[in-house]
Length: 140
Image (cartoon, rainbow, N blue to C red; front, side):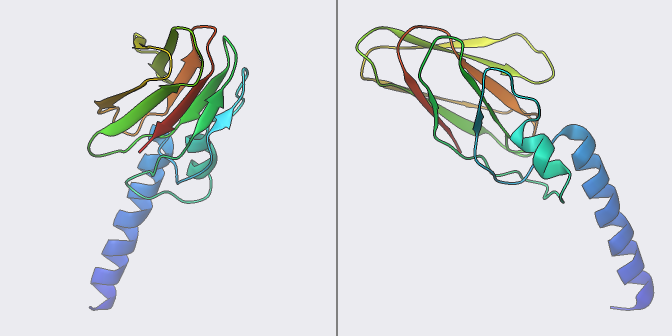
């Protein structure tokens, strides 16, 4: 490699990192379960340096109605989101992107696990417990 190609590659990487920060793509981190999340995991990761594909982590325990957790998503390809109902009653998770798209509801019977695979394009998602049964949520 010569100096010119190194400079070109460095400029390209700087552009990728800056673009990823604008899109809210983050690095791997623990899901932040909170009813009032101030900053999502993806936004925290975007401040420290960002790969093109953000790893997604979990599990997040959503024990009560209205509790929620934020998850970063993969920039390229689908993100698998699994919701496990740890209670004895009907459970439901509400999934919505941080850009405000229409929410998707995932019904889960008592003791069961239900998974979906969606392409959210690196946009962080928020998962909220929409029922009175405790849920455990993982994403990968």
